[in-house]
Length: 218
Image 1: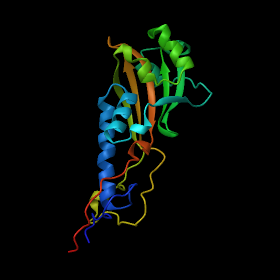
Image 2: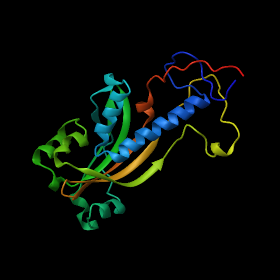
Image 3: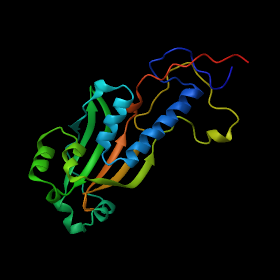
């Protein structure tokens, strides 16, 4: 039977088969490309969920996470155009983007409150509205500073082997995190006002894989 065979008919979860690993690799790449080209990670995740039939997971909300406020790292201060003496002017927010008890990403955010309206500052301090929704009136853009891959459905060096990893007949064990992005956000006028560190979970991939016909026996 072909290395790309997968069980026929519908399945509710990704299976540990070569074909599902390849399909999931393509989907993760598509999802990440959308995030890299979009201005708002929150809006991108929400649209991705809609496109893949996960409407019950909307809207996303920002669940506060952690109580400490770490200092802004020097490279992020540089990205914001600030010196070390200006670090104390920044505000810090760390959240999980969640819906229906599922965490889709974790985000740390250092931002300049002086570039936000009073309404925005109040919402960031008192509500569970995601950052991207709150600052949307700024017509902001994103500039990627760092991209870190944390997991791949295909093992390192798979392309150098004559066969893909064999199927096990079990559901594919997904990791805690897929990848991480660090980005600087700029207002419509090009002024940097925030640095975000976003770590994405596989929850955006937990939809039913497409049903496929059985493979023909050679």
